[in-house]
Structure formats: structure tokens, C-alpha cells
Image 1 (tube, one colour):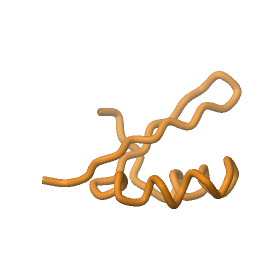
Image 2 (cartoon, helix red, strand yellow; image 1 turned 120 degrees about the vertical axis):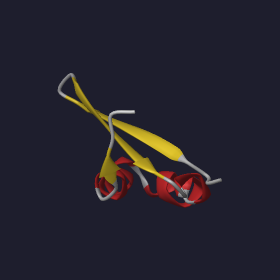
Image 3 (tube, helix red, strand yellow; image 1 turned 180 degrees about the vertical axis):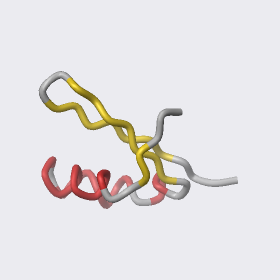
Length: 50
């Protein structure tokens, strides 16, 4: 069991999805920092298509 989270980054009409097995535990810390730092955190994760 994990605390999975998936994040979607949309830029110029294209989207990419990133996932983290334990990402739900960090969501409250990642999002309030603002869109630029949060997007940087998401892109550091594994890109996923599921």
C-alpha cells in the first residue's frame, strides 16, 4: 500500500503526468510553495502514462 499521487503539468496545450508512490504525503508541502517550485518538484518525479 502506498500514498500515491499523480500530478499533471499543462503547458501550451500539452500535458505531462508524473506519479509518486508516496506523493500524497508531500502534497501539502509541495503545493503552497507556488506553481514554479511545485512544477519543479513534479518534474523531478517519474513521468507516467497510467
